[in-house]
Image (cartoon, rainbow, N blue to C red):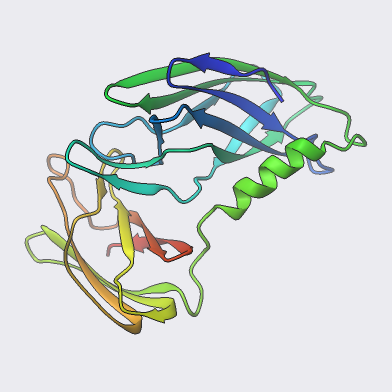
Length: 247
């Protein structure tokens, strides 16, 4: 693990295991906001900063993917955020393209309380030999992967989606993993920097639901045809993330 980088709102560090036989490295960016502070999801809402990782140029390691555990939709009189208010680890998939002895990365996140503070840190981590076990790192990464939303399945999926003719609302039809009465939470990640959470209508019958969400102002001259958005559905203790393709 790298050393912790600290600021007034929290701290973060890099966690990684040795490369496997194919050169793939399981890693994570671990962020611990202080009490009362939050950090952000992939599309954080109007004012947040999503987590970003940049591997140092010339490194023998490349970033393949960053994944996002299920966030909270935090709403009160002052904020409407898609965020995390406790420790969170963002799983990373890295690829070694040579003899990777160290990882040098720049992490950039937003961390907020009454104000938002950009938090940037240079993180360096020495990779241990492949034969050496790393139980603490393995436990951190295993817990992070448990908190990821599941992929669509037969019992938990978006079964239909319709954008209104004027583009101001999006209706989703869903199959849910359990019977219930309360409509699920829905977060739509639209164009980069845009997220939609306001449900203007919602119904649920057993393990099926229908929700209509308000679509706010989109980028100027934005053409949705051929685009793919993402939707996160949270139903009790389970969550699912699915692409939404627009023809």
